[in-house]
Image (cartoon, rainbow, N blue to C red; front, side, top):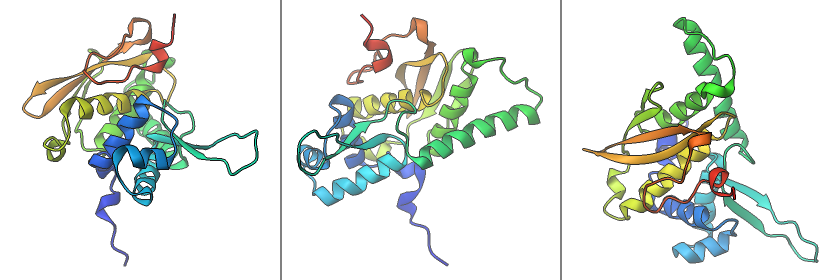
Amino acid sequence: MRRRDATRHPRRTLLSRPRLLLLDRLLRDSPQTAPQLADSVHLHHNTVREHLDRLVDDGLVVRETEHRTQRGRPHVLFSAAAGGVGLSASAAAQTRRALALGEAYRHAYGFPDPADEADGTAQIDVLEDYLDRRGFRPRVDRDALAVRLACPFGELQGSMEQHTICGVDAAVMRSVLGRVDGPLRVMDVRSDGAGTCVLRLIRGAEASAPSCPGCPPDPRTSSAG
């Protein structure tokens, strides 16, 4: 029987300093090639490609081939994922499973299905499932549009700046929330002490840039005007 590689567990995807650094670079400047990223984080190209493969598989990074109008081999470009555009097959499948689980839960416990997408139920289903699988142990208050989280990054806090971890964290949550249609956006992620934080959501018409230092702006709300 083949032993499962523990490093492939979904919880390990973000619990990696190199992968967080790569995400941080891509959130600030996309697209980039693997060699460009390798130079910026001072790692071997092959190592960076392995990390990028993991991030693509998890739906946090999108891979595409450069469109060239001149002769020569096109570059493979990597960008930070923004919602459901260009998701890997595995990330898209997990999103569908999360939606199905949310629907099954409501049916099992007699909760009504949402009348339409306007209440953000599907978005929270997908976000809660993602956070649970990644070790955040989310506790969702759907009425208050808030999610209390346990921080899984304790082992990295001595080797990375806190605002980098929190900035990537918030950007990932924005992207996951945008995998399905709905009105909800990330407002901010605030530390609540003792290794916990609170993710606050807001409806799109009221959304603004996240307040956490180092958080890249949400392209869906920062491009207007």
